[in-house]
Each structure stands twice: as C-alpha cells, then as structure tokens.
Image 1 (cartoon, rainbow, N blue to C red):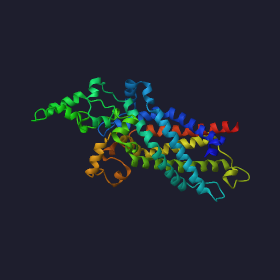
Image 2: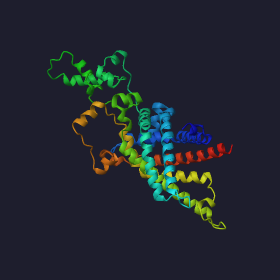
Image 3: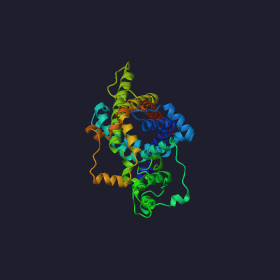
Length: 378
C-alpha cells in the first residue's frame, strides 16, 4: 500500500480524477438542484416546472442556493465514481484476459457496469441524503426561530433524540386546545406532552425534512441506518445506470474504431492497430451514454430522492418493526423501492437529469483525458 501511494502515476490519475469530477459536478450542480426540487415538490395533482423552481430558489436563497450541499455531493461523487470506474476496469480486464483482441462485449459491459453501480450506490448513499436534504432546504421557507427559553423547555428523551430541537409553541398550543375539552386530572398536561417523543413537533407529525438536514441531526434522530434510506431504489438506479452507461459506451467505442479503420491499408486485425481515438470523440460517446443511462434509470432516481426526504424517527421505526408493518405496493414496487403514491410522477425532471448526466459525463471524461495527457507527458 505504501508503494502504491508513493507511485507518481497513481497520484497523477487520482488528482486528474478528483479535479475532473469536481469541475463536472460544479458545472452541472444547478441542474441537479432544480431536478431534485422538481421531483420532491411535485405531486400527482400538482406538478412543478423548472422555471417555478428556479424563481423559488432565487427568491428564498439567492443564486448561492443552487449550490447548497455541493461539498457533500462532490465528496460522494469522487468516491462513488472512483469505485464505479475502478471496479469496472477490474472486471473488464478479467473479461479481456486471454483474448487476442482487446475488446469487451456489450453484454459483458452491462453486467460489469451493473456490479460497479451496485458498489457505487452503497458508498454514495450517505453523501447523497445530506445533499438532497440540503437542496430541499434551499427551496423551502424556514420557520421563524424560537426564543432561548422555549428551546430549553425540552424533555430529556427528546433532547437525546434531537439535540437541536426547537419546539413549535403554536402547534403545541393548538393540540392542547383540542385536548382541553377532555377531562383530565394531570396537573401539567403541557409539560407531559413536551416529554412525549411523538409530540416533539407539537402536532404529532414527524419533523420536517428542512429541520433534519445536517449529519448530526440525521444520526441522532433517525439512526445510522437512515444514511442508506431508499437503498433498494438507489441500488436499482445505479445498477441500471452503470450497466447501460458502460454497455453503450463500449458499443460506441467499438463503432468509432470500426469507422476509423475504414480505408486503412492494410486493414487492421486488432483494435490496437487502429490507434487511439481523439479525446473529444471519447468524451462525446461518454456524454451520449450518460444521457441514455439517465433516461433508463430516472424513475428509480425519483423514488430514491423522494424516499430520502422522508423523516423517520427511531420511535416510528421501532413501532413499524413491532407491528410488522408491510411496505405498500406490488411486488415490483416493493423490490425496487418505489412507493405506489409516486406512480404518476416518476418521470418528473427526466430532461433535467438527462442533460445533467450527459454534460457531466462529457466534462468528466474529457477533463480526465486532457489532464492525463498533460501531466503524464511532463
């Protein structure tokens, strides 16, 4: 491991990868923010447009709101894409081992890309949930802050679950007004309700996603497992994306090699005899493959984004386990993590994601090859 870290070639590829991913993410992140807000804010009876989301984020958070959560997204994409491409290259080398021609079949590229996408989903999910909730916060109107005395009036159990808890006095007083018609012998009903976890928001509902967007709040209120919420839809999304991306990229790469070999005398027997393709052609093929993969996996991306915006405190998760709560939907929806209420909005924001994935793939691959050519040549 020490020899690997001291290897200059390894450091060059790592720097080129991190720089290209950061640049590609920075250029396309506003599209991702608008896409997430369209997916999360839309409903079957109310579907938002990109123009509405743009004006809302600009009015509430300014232009900086389009880059909320950018740091978490960049960290997740650097690690996730590194695992995706690295694991794919390992599987591709295994497939090409022993062949005269250095070629990966389309079916092999799909299987290897699906396996690489599975690993990417596991690594990227904790970063993605923080990114998504930060983006939702940038497009939401935050409630007014409570006073210091109100913040301190919190029960010990709620303080352990949610250290940054801010009680909603208005909602609590409304609940107390509804209960005032009942006869009670409790001397301090308001204080008792404050210590009851189910009434931490004053209304009996879970806290809004805008209040549980930080890493510490997610872990304390929902547990470590919440970092992988929407795991099934995320795995299916990244597996489909990786399989379609690499299979179509291998197909286009071979087609461009065959086109380049036309007219060569003598005709080349192997791909190595054709010569390397231009970085622009390889980047264009990657961008087109990314757009196709985004279309094929978009419905699972919507299910993943919407599930990550559901706040599920520990006490509700415990109730569901005790009651043996069953996931709604048919067999396909249960296996893929799609909620049946989201059937009519699964393709919301598909063109935004298609443009983002295509442009990001083009930029990442192009910047990577350009950086390698410049750094290695020196």
